Image (cartoon, rainbow, N blue to C red):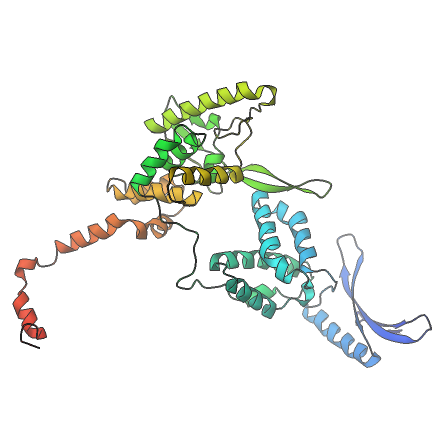
Length: 415
């Protein structure tokens, strides 16, 4: 064993059972942890010369503040521990659950076996290229990259890696012709048909809440009767509900509906109840009374507007299944649940009587330009209004000498 002073590191020889030296290990001190325990990192090489050179390099890294703890932890192992021990204290449970989904679905199958200390920007670039070739959208790839970046940033802060390799890569740009999950909003005749057919189904209140107010699907699922005032004709958006993974003490995960507060102050808002929506909510109360009689002691008084047959909050997974079956049955084209919100905004703005500022406030957008970005290019009335207004400014057709224009272009002269 060769040992140096002043924190320059130690070299240890490793022998086999016969006493023959087979390798050398270099150990460096990295200070002490919060409990006062000394932190050390160790590397192993084959020859003594390599060990001495390595000790010099590690000493320089220590002086530069770039020395890290090397371990065999893979992206999969580190990622799952990061989800379980870190993100649950930093973000909502539903957000943490979404992080885990992205890691398990898109990151681990390709990079899960790579050690954290070995991860390089080239790994990440090749991984994103592969995902794109598999047909994933730019937004999906960028979402997975963002979560991987947050995970690596945490590893960088903890001294597991020198630098976050994701920060040395660029996000994927959307290309023309890329697939998109966003569907064109429903036309008015489709909205009328859905609302009419839904009246005699369990999706009655859901469709009326969504299409008469334009709230988000999670906000509709999170609506409680205590938020509804039928006498005054208003209801309040006080939270959202979404399926989230809950980690049990024994390490097992359980997926269940989780209610969260609104993300922003603008999302917490009060909206009027139209006459048609009030009738639908009355029908929903009657349905729940019948369901409670049928369920008997199994009935759970959750207080939610949208509930299962035993009173539990409606899960988004069950909602999506019934939603898709309903549209297939009545012959209306499928759009995403979130596209119902777009359908309502488009219908309102196309009337010419609803300013986009009112849509922005009712939709809980924190910025007006967000509303313009999402809906400004999807309103035919805006284009019609532009052409109509422009026509009133430019010279009318009767003032244009069409014959002179044709002669200038050689039209009508046999050319």
